[in-house]
Amino acid sequence: MINETHDPNLKSWIESANDPNTDFPIQNLPFCLFYNENSPNYPVEGVIIGDYVLELTNVLQPLKDEKLIEDNDFREWMLQNTINRRIVFTDNEEVSRLRKYLVELLRADCPKEKREVLQKGLFPISEIKFAVPAEIGDYTDFYCSIFHATNVGAMFRPDNPLLPNYKYIPIGYHGRASSIVVSGTDVKRPKGQNRTDQDAPPVFIPAKNLDYEMEVGFFVGKGNNLGESIPIENAEEHIFGLCLVNDWSARDIQAWEYQPLGPFLAKNFATTVSPFVVTLEALAPFRVPAFEREEGDPQPLDYLNGEQNQKHGGFDIKLEVYIQTEKMRAESIEPFLLSRSNMKDLYWTIGQMLTHHASNGCNLQTGDLMATGTVSGREKSERGCLLELTWRGKEPIRLPNGEERRFLEDGDEIIMKGFCEKEGFRRIGFGECRGRILPAD
Image 1 (cartoon, rainbow, N blue to C red):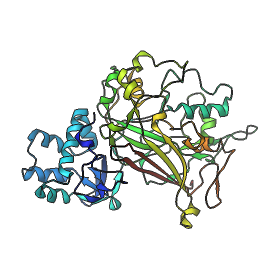
Image 2 (image 1 turned 90 degrees about the vertical axis):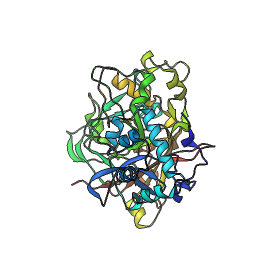
Image 3 (image 1 turned 90 degrees about the horizontal axis):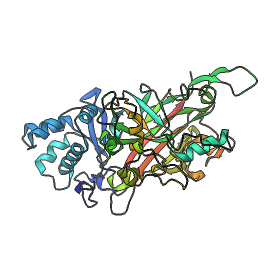
């Protein structure tokens, strides 16, 4: 629901939040976990506002002590000190309640005595080290862009690119939670079995065809009990918020290992996530209908076919991918735009992904991460990975300094961005999801 927290005329006493180009106006307030001088070894919870992060725990306690939080029950609830702990106690109404209270604290007319307390918990983003924004127990990656699936399928099955199940079922695989890293973490080139020479046995070498995948992730808030399903009408009650995801992929390792059980070592060496979780409520103005299927396509089966999901299940989130090579950095050349795509082009919504995941009674848990799979569009400029952009390396990309890329080389850094823009509302952004490739051992 759109409410007073989305008012484009709201201003903050933190001036950088009023910049029309910021990702983090007062209308956003994404959550994060970060380290600071008071907590160098264990991350604390905060929200992002302009160029600052506001630490919640050590700010809310003084507000409580000085009786500047009037609602005792709400005060105690807010003093939970981790994102996972808060999600346990938050449904959509509680998230809305918290956002409204934070807006009251951060808006331009906030009383001076409250500002003075809050300022003690403000830290410049540029000086902060962020953590993965939740304690992730499980990670599932989907394959929900029909344009990506069609492109990849066409490389191997030109006459029949989509498998028969694609339009009936959100395809996914179970990823590796322990190797999820926060934006800015370097990623070491993986080793694996390679059999690009079909006339010889496989060899164990560093991956040659290393790739990125531009994805959007979402965190489970409220879980479900083992053996219980989640109706599509209630799916978003179990989703806390969204982030950016780079599902690094070693394509040559993947090509050899994926049959018959799918992705394994080609993808579990690292997955990078952005540090900020944008709530569903902050994204309310940017909801769109679910993907409009072509005439003749099957409609979702009943358990995936909710009226509200069809009307409002999509998100108009613009996604961008940039590359900066080691040589470009040395020559002070800005990162080069590789592609632009949009989350609204996904064939399946996040509500359908979550409902399908739990449809067999799988118990989802607070902090679980799910990702959409590569987000690609119809056009070549909208392809969300190098496998598509270079068509398996056959059509290399030429960079501004004359370099070419078929796949990623050591020293390359991938920068992903996501943001929403709509007339009558403030821009809402996701920040960046960065990762640089280091050589294999």
